[in-house]
Image 1: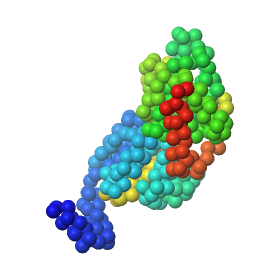
Image 2: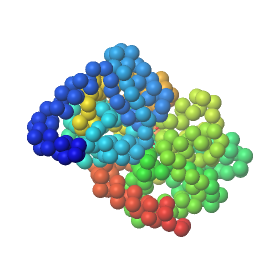
Image 3: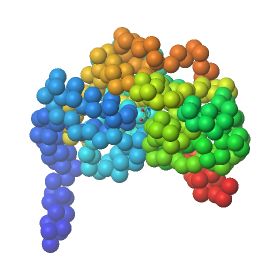
Length: 348
Ligand code: PLP
């Protein structure tokens, strides 16, 4: 009976009136809160949460999620979004969200303050996302464990296949982690798809675990629970600052890089707060919070201080990562399915 009444009501309201009712709800919801999915590591997320709240009085509800998980949640909630802003995490899933119309276009006045690659990320998505930071992929190893096990330090992607590293390597699971998806896309761009999958199958034999989050393998290296991690080079100085015996490597064959991005969710209930947050997150002081939280990406704001620990990309062989191709939803789905079928789920 109740369902029937709702159906009648819905028909009576019609699409226009429903939109109006939702709009009124949005205005009410906007008072003083903002719901954010945060894609960087928790220390930076917390600093963003408290600093923005302190300067605006807007309460930020925040959850930390890997980029693959964030994309899945935003897609699942699209009929009734619970998130206003998706802050950080690798750029490809942000582009995929834009393509699927899960995020809305917003041209912040602060876009003028950004480096070219951040603006081109925005243009590519017709302003449904924007670049926040950039940084190179590589790997890292625990110097003490390596010495104890009498293993040579790896220098190239190819080295990770050495039989002596069996059970010593971790990469995140690409279904949940944007880092690991970017690692697969990097391999495909370096050696072509079939060779890349041969590589991933061989690597699988040396992998002890595929942790859920991109940060997991490096944390495990720091804590001596794992020897070698596929990881962000810019995340390694933070581990060293905390006293962990970790060293980063820029792979000799070349490597991919991320354009960490930010998007406003379509149907955000707190749209005007979301725009305030977005504008703020593109300012130099907001972007300097990354280094304050010991995370050393290159900020997209040209005026943000560049910490000396930010990796010098002039000394790293970077590939010309094809964000357009690997930012496509169909490409991501296809590569993840192939990885499940031929690598993770197969008897290698
Ligand atoms: N980029 C940076 C700089 C990060 O710190 C993280 C997570 O901590 C990510 C990207 C993406 O994480 P994930 O691979 O779990 O999606």
